[in-house]
Length: 332
Image (tube, rainbow, N blue to C red; front, side, top):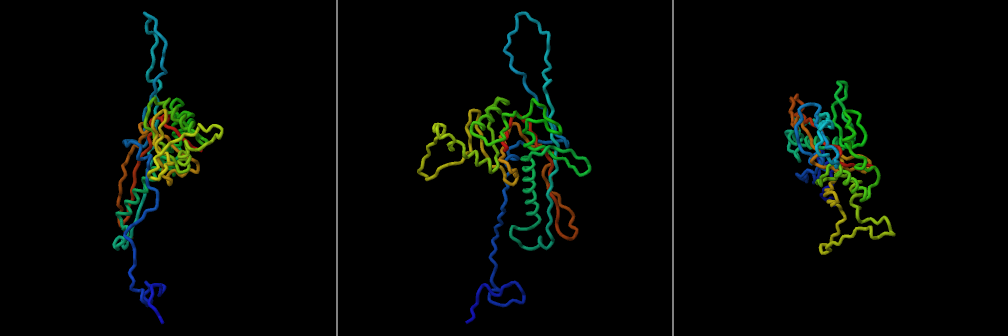
């Protein structure tokens, strides 16, 4: 005996199809799931300032080494010090970021999940633009100047700022580069991590609230601190913590590292932006980091030439690393 069912005909939307299921209603949720990492922790961490030129600059200075020598009674001042001899001027080019979008007239008119209209297209483009900026900040590329022949303005990323070597363009003076002790290029131990923090403290003299933004691979290494036995002959090296087991929960993550030189928050970097195959992390002092905007993020709608609504979102800005010595880097 023939029976009505949901699986015949095979193409229920075809006008020539017949059968019981041509009248079955579709079950499409109104919920849209965006499957992509969206957070921008370093951009969010940086203070927001304004730029007024395509090359944004700032001045840094240092104090002379302390003197413990005494002064003889009655001695005159015969030599004078230029207090501004150590000043240096750092800078970074601003960079244009842009994302475009287009929605057809028919798509704009129909009812859709999401919805898939011009307003949503514009909002999504803005979210993508923020990730573009974060990715540039996380990178190790040096700055470039516009040459009118295909090379645009780009700004120097953190990986290039936090270096003990001179950069190619607008190099950082040796006195203000990131100390070698603040950069780790091999698998770090807790001692190595504490040495970085000590090196940063030596530069700033501040027990600042530092933040480590780490990619997935490095975050796993940090979480292993204080619970991995590396020396079976010296069990006392293992740090032991007692936890209340009433909640049937054991915490193995490290989100706050309380060191001899201040607290370090540990954040996950955006995996779509920290794409290095290396284990990578930046130890940042927000006091010495900002993002300067020349043109704030905004949307521009273009003429509908018959195909549909279109436009773009853009912004122009640059990373300001106020003091390269105030930060640290782990990359290996």
